[in-house]
Image 1 (tube, one colour):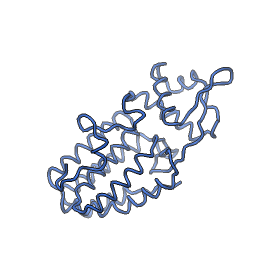
Image 2 (tube, helix red, strand yellow):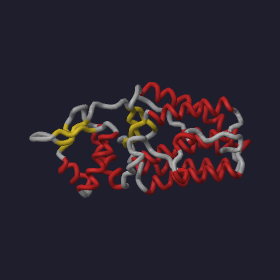
Image 3 (cartoon, one colour):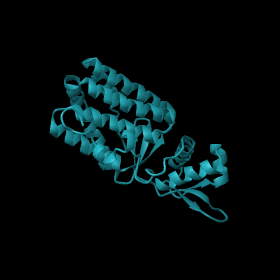
Image 4 (cartoon, helix red, strand yellow):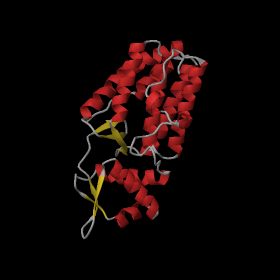
Length: 255
């Protein structure tokens, strides 16, 4: 519970043992090893450059590309199939094929693959970005030492995702950090609206894919540093720095 008697958004439904969050229902009971996630991300990048139904290669070719063991590749394949990104066809001429494309939206230098109309998620992200400065102002005025300590715990989860090279876990941890910032606000309407927007974005996200402009691992490392700076600014009550970092943070999603 936060200092205003409210739980951070989604904690009542998403919190697991030890305060950790499942990434998505399909994967919640079987967390993937980092190398499997990395292999899945690499093949997912091929999917973004392949027409729907296009052939990606044989299992052997793609496993060699990813330089992983058979077991790790099979785990990566499970992830890709659970996220609706690839299909497998047996027999001559078979292999892995790009599935019919999920709706996608841009998030900075990453891409979110969705299970719903991208317009809904893109609109939710734009509204969320517009509300962020209001929530930061409230956090500057009302954030307690306990609130800051909770934010640093969320940063630790983000940092672990960076070290694991798990972009999907990082994005979910990022959203949970923002939910905790929103929980500081004394305004129940603002908290509720922001929580609802995060619910829309999170519930429809299947996977996080790299874009072509910047390696995904480099991107999430930079984003972690930005959020760490934002929490520092909140702790120091440095309004100018906090709002500057909020502006730098809010990259609008595009179709």
